Image 1 (cartoon, rainbow, N blue to C red):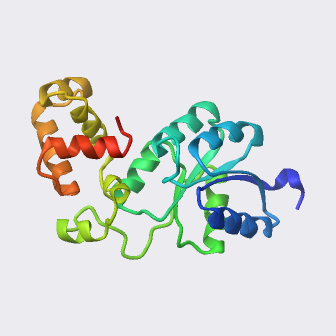
Image 2: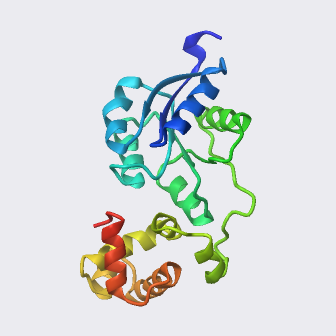
Length: 220
């Protein structure tokens, strides 16, 4: 295949074995050309523009910028690049939020080489591609099951919707429910409902715990 016809792929992941493995898989497929890799959000922002990829295969949990910041940076600075979120984390809220914020697709790290190739080809053609996982978390999953399947703080955070994360940040900045509602153009009652849902999902009992969690996750 002519190199000009190949899909140029940039891979961002902080695990060397993933970078090497996926790079090898794609390099052995004549449809693709790996044009760059990065192991952090900062490295991604330094290298991506020069590499000029068609598709960015983006891990969510990397050092440096928050994954939403990475998505926003790419959409602002390289809007033609299609973002394919590539992660071991999966909830329906997460997938919905990623697509809403500009990702062109979602791919679990359990995907086969054929599924990786299919996903990259789909998003490169302007399609939205979501590969779901068996037994993925449902929004209706009971709290006890949900907590058992989210063993670390990053997983807990991904159980929150984008709106809930926004409200968590504002709570951590000391804003009242009334002020948060005015900031987000929603009612105080809606803010209070979100607050209760955040506490439930994170299995916390107080705003102090929410603030500590937000600081640990570098949200504030």
